[in-house]
Structure formats: C-alpha cells, structure tokens
Length: 564
Ligand code: GLY
Image (tube, rainbow, N blue to C red; front, side, top):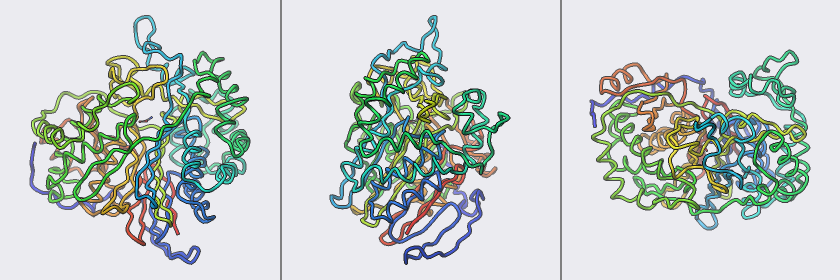
C-alpha cells in the first residue's frame, strides 16, 4: 500500500459544476431551503435524475401517498423523461426502509433471459458477436419494471396504480423538456435510431438532426400505453394484447422473447445484505446485484483510519483504489442466486475482508487496457413524512437499450442481455469480463452493478444513496458513503467530489478530469496507470437526520431535488 503525507482537505476545491444558490421558499407551510442540485427540507424529499420525475413523486407525497406510492409515480415519470436510461421496457431494484417494522426490504425486478436463450446465442461462426447482445432484438431480456413497481405498491402502497401513473401520463402526453444529459446522449447513438420513425418523431427534428436540450418532447403512444394499464398493470402488460404486440415486434426482428416469457415474469422479494460499518448499518441488494462489492469495499476500509487521511487525498485514494480492485475481483463470484450459489456471507465475513485487505496492500499495477464507459440507468431516493425511505435504481442498460421502440406503444426495449457474460473472456459494454457464473441461461437474471443503499444509525435511517453508470455505480456509491460518514461532507459536496474507479479488468485507475493535478501526479508517482475520463457515473443521495433532510443529485447528469 503506497502511503503519502496527508493532502489538504479538498472540499474547497470541489468541481464547480453548479453554482450554489440558496433561497428560501415556503411550501405547504414548511420552510424549504433549496440550492442548485440540492435541497434541504424537514419532512419529505424526492431526489431523482429528472426534475419532472422528482416533482411527480412529491405530488404523490403531498396527496397523502407514502414513499412507495411516490416511488411508483417517480419511476413511471422517469421512464418518460429519461427513456434513454430506464422505463417500463427495463427493470430495476428497490430497497425500502419501512418505519413501522424498522426493517429493510429488497425487491428485485431485474429482467430475465427469455426461455429460448442459450449460453452460445451470441456466437457466430465460432466467434462471439457482442453487438448482438447490445443492439437489436436478440439483446432484449424480459422486462420487469411494471411487475416490480406493482408488487411494491401492492405490498406497501396506499394508492391505486392509475393515480400513481397520472403524472407520467401527463408528461408523456402534454410534453416534457429534453434534459441536457439525454440531449448529449442522443447524437452518440443517432445513426442507430434516426431512421426509425418512432424514435425520429420524438427525438429528432424534421430535417433528421437530434433535438436540442429544452425542446418539448411528446410520447403520446407511451401515454396511451400507461393509461391502458388501468389499475392492473401486471395483468394488462404481461398478458393479452400488449404482451402479444411486444412479442410480435421482437419476433419480426429476429428476437426470441415470447408472450409466454412475459406471462412468466415474476419479481422477487429478497433479504437485503448487511454490513456493520464504523457505527452504521449498511443495507443493499443481494445477488443478482453485485452491490455486495460496495459492502466489501467499505468493509475493507472500515476502522482503517481513512478519516484521518484527508478528503480525496492521494493517500486515501490509493487505499481506496486497492480495496476497490479486490472487491471487483470478487465480483466474478456474483450472479443470479437461482443458478449459482453466491458465497455472500463468506464474502462479507470479517475473515474474508481482512484477507482481501491484506491482498490489496501488495497489489502492483498491471499494464493499461481499454477504458470503461458510462451509459444508461437512473437512480432516485425518497423519504416520506412517516419515516419510510425508498432507494431505487432502474435501467434499460445502454442508451435507449436495444435501440428498439415498439411503435404503437412508444415503448423502448432494454438490452439487458449484455449484462450477462456474452461468452467466456469477452468483456461486455462496461468492459466487465464474462465469467461462467454469469453466462446466459433461460430464465436467468443477468448480474447487475445497480447498488441502492440505505444506511441506518442506531436503527434509524441516516443515508439513502445510489447511482447510475454501470460498474461506476459500485465505486461511486462506496465513495459517497465514505465521504458522508468518514469525511462528514453534505450530499452536494459528496456527489460533486471527483471520483476514481478501478474494476480490476482493465487494471487501470479511471479518474475524473476534475481531480486536482497535484493529486493525479501523486497517484501517478505511486505507479498507478491513470486514465482521465470526463465523468464516472452519477450518484444521488439523501442525508437523513430527524427533522432535517438534505438531498442532492449529481450535476453531471442533472435532475431534481424537492422536498417539504
Ligand atoms: N445495466 C446496468 C446494470 O444493471 O449494472
């Protein structure tokens, strides 16, 4: 482990992504302090990667709904405004802290591989063709989003689905502004979608150029689809006419998803995984999420004295990089638990964490390889006035998923099949190498990096945090958690702090371009191979104290933080 003298606290050098503008407003009698990219409020809060989606959640809270009701409304609205990242053609994970029981509940509504899926389905003439898992009908896994949202609503919600869907329907029909993040993404994949009349009608000008940020977009077909779900979205989406339309569309394009696959889809309630970390109890999603890696990273750093090293100091970052690498090496053991026994208790045991920490001390950097990329996925967090907390990460995988929209439904289909190992040794779009544990099989859930996390202190919620950006979710959630608890940063400072990422393969250290030059130089001098990237995912968080909520979204991706 390279060690260096402490580096001065970096909070003052935070990347100035957004000016901090504080103003006081009065909403429903509560004093709400708002800052750009962040908010503070006493009772309730929604933070999402879309301002209209955050407002949709708050609207439901104000109508008396709880955090789960609001989560359904926020997720549906987010699927309209951020359709390149998430939506009802995708899937996700929801983590709930339920105040009445004081317990955590994890809901897995991850997509599954269709029944006809096979481990070698992306092999052509003896060679893997990774693009088949990313673009086009063979990339589509069975969507779980609606089944999951409705399962959460039925167990913990208080409102009918149609009421929760109303804000999303209104946005899709009346229009919503194209957000800057999506406006940046669309040109990146324009050649793959700009000849498709459905995408073209929404996201392109009549002359075929991508629309600019702020342009009003409409998706009336998606509005009609959500409206048609009434109060029984599960039955209406996964069976009958809508399921048949989706299956026919996929089949006509050479895919394997069938109406029977949709009918067979079931979300799964799972026991959250837990780690005691420096006086906090951290909870997150078990496999098929690899969020256990977040806990491993934090577990290796627990009680290790990083607090004394200085915020984003080279000494702290070096230690973080080493344990992060060890955590990502273990990621290969994670997979769908219905297919693979994941030794999660062992991976989070004090003995394993101590041994992994010891291995981390002796790591020598290896030669550089290809960089990781940030893509789709979206995250939001909600706290209600009853004390419940919901943290959700949801995705269609890469930008606009499989780059397919079912025209009459306005529905973007995911490319979650790329989260499987497409073939042994072949990296997926995030450069995560396919392992046998995570190979394609019928009915299997692909391994995910989505890591919604809720921290408790003395049994009471203290932090809700999550993010988007493939494997950089894992490193980002770990860093914001450390920055919150070890360095006592508020959420806006924690999410803005430049981050690093090391996922073992490739054996490179990715650093955000805003990391100060002096820190970069010191890391390079330690022997790290650095790759400077514009951004490493987007993290959002709510810091929870009795009567004082403070939330922030990552200004790199934009969003909304609203509260009462
Ligand atoms: N599709 C990104 C993830 O689940 O990690």
